[in-house]
Image (tube, rainbow, N blue to C red):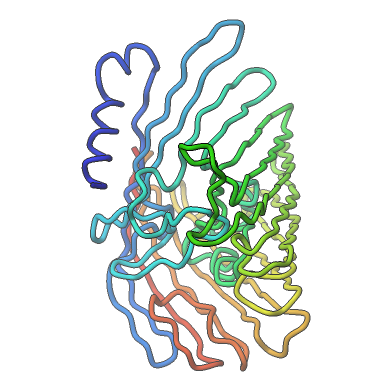
Length: 379
């Protein structure tokens, strides 16, 4: 059924009338890396999809409506390049099972969705863009990260494993949302509202987020502001959610973060701090994640990336983790980048969940190491 839906969608989008009327562009990323690693006594060797950027194929288009107004849309599907299976997960390992998608009322991690990364339609003009559908929350763009939000980035690993929504991972995609983006003289502002658990069925009845339960009405909100001027970039983000279908418990999940970067030419510095309360996969009430890193140019086409991050829980004893990444990227051409990288994530004595190896060790205090080398092509 899924294959038929995708085939019909592609056929409709690439038909001649669609191109003539709507200026449709097909785009995507193909990213695959060979990886070897361990988490405690668990070893892994195989293909990782989306190490530098999530593998995907998408369709985007716009139509001039007059008076500076445009109709816009994006339909984007992720996939695991190692086995071809549709997947919304960033950096998913071939054969690995993705966890439940954070903040979603629909099960979009089982490969049944047609456009699991993004699916929205909207209006764009001098005022900015207003869009409706499944789309990125502001926390996805919180990227003051020397490893560029890649799969092996400390900020990516720690935020994802901790259940945060300020992350470059699947948790940053929100269903049933209305979003706004506007850019004005170097300042970019974003806002989002997502209606959780109160979708209307075809009959007009309110559909619960989970079959067999009552509607939870667990709306979510997000705001961010980013400013860039020459070598300097700074930003802040705030996100709030509530309801058991979103956080895994009945309490609110509140997050905020601040970050910045500065390019000195010979080296680029980046750092960020973020805080979350009432995390989805822990009983602790407060967590802090901070990371710092540098990007050092090597020749005309290469960069060395070095980053360190740490997450700690205020109301827990030694359940946090530290993460280190050393990577190299090389622009082979305008669209093709080769990369190699190593990450080590050390769990505190009472923690085991932080790491990248698909089968995570259940022994507390076990550490994770992974090395990957691969290539990314954009089109």
